[in-house]
Length: 326
Image (cartoon, rainbow, N blue to C red; front, side, top):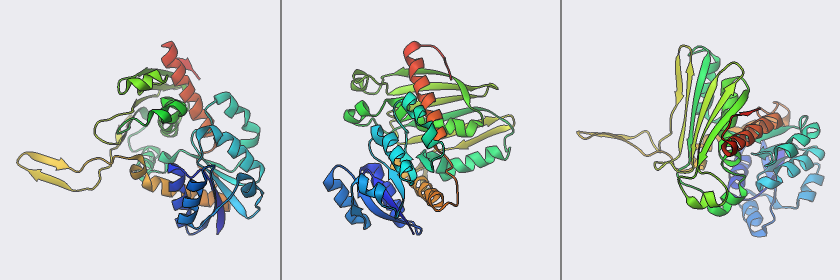
C-alpha cells in the first residue's frame, strides 16, 4: 500500500480522495487544507489524518501527493513535493502564468508528475483515440471538439479561474494535441459574452470558438460555452481520409420511450463529476502505477505547459483579432 497525501479538500479534492481511498494499492493518509473544518470532515470520511503541508513533505512514508488546491498554488506545491521526492498528481492547469510554468522546467521535466487532464482517461475518448491510432478512418485531417457547460459557474469563481481558456478550454486544447498527433503551430479564436454580462464585466468571455492549425495543415475547431441549455455537452468528431470517428454525449440511462409522437431518450448527464466519474477513477488507477514505479505519467509537465501555451495564445488572439503563432 502506498500512502498519499491530499492538498485541497474542496470539490475536486473530495473526488480524488474517495478514489484514492477506494484503490486497493493506495491509502489516503493525510489531508491538508487551510480550512480546518473541510480538512477534518474529509479526513474523517476517508480514514485519513489532518496534517500540515510541511509535515506531509517531511514524512518519508508518504509516497505521493495529490495537489487539488486553488489554481494559484499548483506550481508551488508541485515543486515542493518534487523537492521532497514525492510522486505528484497535480490538477490542471499547472499554473496561470506561462512564463512562470516554463521557468520550472529544470525541476519538473524529471518529476514523476501526472497532470490532471482527466479526459484522456475517459473510456469513450480512449476508444475514439484507439480507432484513430488503428487507422480506422485513414489519416486524420480535421477535428471538432464541443465542450459546453450546463450553466455558468459562480461569478466569484470566474474572477479567480484564469478565464475561459485557462480554466475550461484548456481541457479541449489538451485533447486536440492528444488526438491530432501533431502540435498546433497557429491559433485563432473569437470570444464573446453571450450568457452572462457579469462575466464580461469581470474581464472574461463565456462563449468561444478556437481554431488550431498544425504544420501539416490539420485543423481543429473547439466550441466552448458556459451554457448549453440541455446538459453537459461533450462531443468529439474526428474526420479522416476514409471516414469519421465520433464520441457522443452520455445520457443518464440507456432507456428511451417510443410512442406515436416519436422516440424520446433520457436526458444528458448534467455535471462534470458525473460525466467523468469513470475517467477520474482511471486517472487515480494510473497514478497508483506511477507511484509504484510501474508506469511513467501518461500526461505530465510538458503537456501542461503546451496546453497553457495554447490557452494564452487563444486569449491573445481574442484580444488582437489576429492569429497567433506558437
